[in-house]
Length: 180
Image 1 (cartoon, one colour):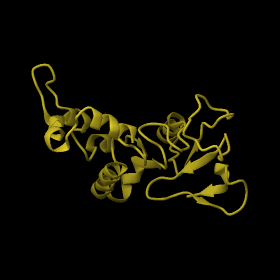
Image 2 (image 1 turned 45 degrees about the vertical axis):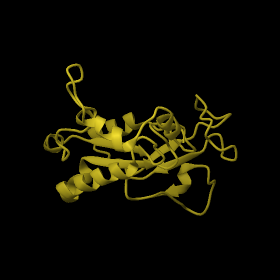
Image 3 (image 1 turned 120 degrees about the vertical axis):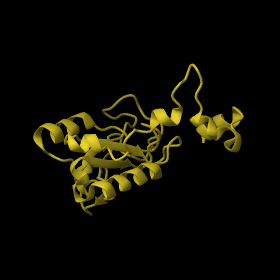
C-alpha cells in the first residue's frame, strides 16, 4: 500500500507514464525494461554450460508480480522440457514483499544451497526459511512478523509448483514438521 501511495503522490499515471520504462536518451542509452530483461529468456547459454539458477520471489511483492516470474518459469520449463529443473528452481515466499519483509519467513541461506547444487550435485528439494520476530535469533527484526508467531518461526520453501504442507504432528512453528 505504501508503494501505491508513493506512486500516486508522485503523480504517476499508468496510461501516460508506463511507456517511460522503454525510454532512452543520450545519458541513459539502455531502457529500464532492456536492463531488466535478459537477452535470452530461455537461458540457452546457461543451460548449455550446465549452469544452475535459484529464483526467489516474494508473493506479496508490490513492485514485480510473482505471476510474471511464474510465467517466465513455466516458459523456461516448456523450452527445456523435463530437464528444466536440472538448471533452475523457483521458490515463492508467502507474505514476503520486494526482497524481504512482510509477514513472512524471509531469511534463508541460498548461497550454500546453490553451492551444494553446483559443487555437490544436491538439487534443492526444499529450503528452510526463518522469520525475524521480536526476541528471535535473527536481526534486524522484521516489524511485519505477527506477534502471535514464534520469534524463531521456520518454514520450508518448496520448488514451484509444490507447496509446504504441515505433517499434522509436531510444532507448527518448526520447518521440520512440514513437507513439500
